[in-house]
Length: 276
Ligand code: GLN
Image 1 (cartoon, protein in one colour):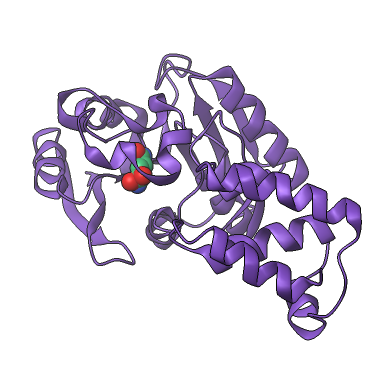
Image 2: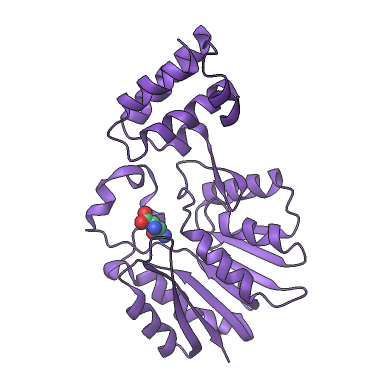
């Protein structure tokens, strides 16, 4: 069996996935260690017996719904290769919108940023990679997430990121930041979205929040002003139907210049505000 024929068969077997061809391609790159361009150019390369066995095992797991990122243990975010595990959310492209908006507002010089609920460390590491002069604090309540974020920071040699275990602000008493960013859990526990696709294999603690998904968002908005320096920003990712409620909570908590940005799918996804 060669690369090309395996890809064709595998894509057919993965037809229930949203991206059969892409999934198959990633698994083939992972097992053969070959770049996409090599696989495309030399499609007649035969698979070894060992490669074929490994691919069959991964294909069967993917058919049962396991996310491709869990099978390979990596996912790219902001062009950074990140380790991922079932302990945290798999970084999403839409969260790159949050990174873009944050970078556009980070003050020059030594800027202190806090990433709440960092998971794999995706947002913190993306900001750190663009702004080596900044000081980034990344916190998570879950020890497994903290360990994963530390591993990612070490792999990428990001010396300006410190990772702490903290339940939102619990370990940060008295500390102040120039910017706070977060992709908190914001899905309602009854959302049918939770029964489909990759989210079934991701931790509930990273996805679901009380009060129709608003509980953690509101907690962060209400507590952030006392952890921000004057002029500091809060930027939050939220659900596509939560924009109006989130803006209202920002205004109630005393933020000014409150605005919402859309994700790549055109949905309201990131809301931000400034403390005067
Ligand atoms: N946007 C993610 C999803 O829809 C959820 C991310 C989150 O809850 N923070 O699967």
